[in-house]
Image 1 (tube, rainbow, N blue to C red):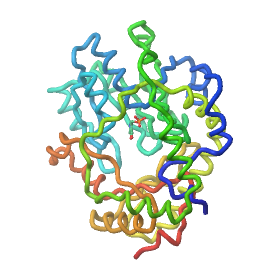
Image 2 (cartoon, protein in one colour):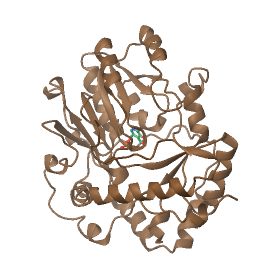
Image 3 (spheres, rainbow, N blue to C red):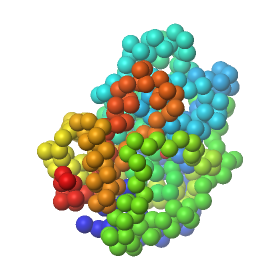
Length: 368
Ligand SMILES: Cc1ncc(COP(=O)(O)O)c(C=O)c1O
């Protein structure tokens, strides 16, 4: 096992690093692996900025648009949308990540959505058709959040008016959020790319990844141990960088590494399957069944039997240098209305996420 297997994010290969300089590829060209037809292509540094752009676009016709997000959602990712003027409402998901439509029909009476975000959690293609029906009735724009999805699979990207992907999460690239627009409305001139905004600098990403590539395994493990925060901690604040544009270096790296997406998918499925087998005797169950077909897991999501067990496994594994994670940092609105968001809060307290971009040493996963 290499040190790279112990990092939370995939690392670039040396040839990719050498390709950081060079001519910038056409934006439509790099979107090819994610585009299904004639969707309009809009690149950003991150998907959170794509969402903010949709809010700003919708604000043109609906002042301070109401944005519905699932209650199981990373608060940090909602910050650019909030800054763009969104009035955020959180709709409840159930413990199997399906949408609580009874609660939605209640919520629609007081705060009907202008924009509705449907999430394909952890890369699993989930059924967005009921959300499309709901949005049609409510007069809302449907956004498929495929930030955890490596590449189109199942019906991902075929239902929503918009779909966004976060190639920077799956590929070893410094930034990259892709918004694909299917609606006629989005073809109007009012929808503008963030070409005039800055792109984040890539030097620190580059330096960090190089250090991770050359660091001895022991150092990588020590870093995981030292970077561990308390299991129950949800850091508030911390908005993503305001630089919303895709950097040219990232564009080049995305184009190069996207060519390996199929191989990446096979490897991720294999690693996910190995984790599934290794954890079969642990007190808990995988969040999803094993049938991924051609979809690609973003993380192996393991639901521990109780919050105490989850916390114990989390700390044990991190002490052993495995970059297991909790998700998400929950919004204060969700935590403050716990009776409406019971399942999302329970998910946050019991689900552990293990990386699947590289194999995890089974010996380190054993129970204490
Ligand atoms: C479900 C989901 N949607 C959207 C985002 C935002 O993605 P990005 O990091 O590209 O801004 C995240 C980020 O973690 C996420 O988990």
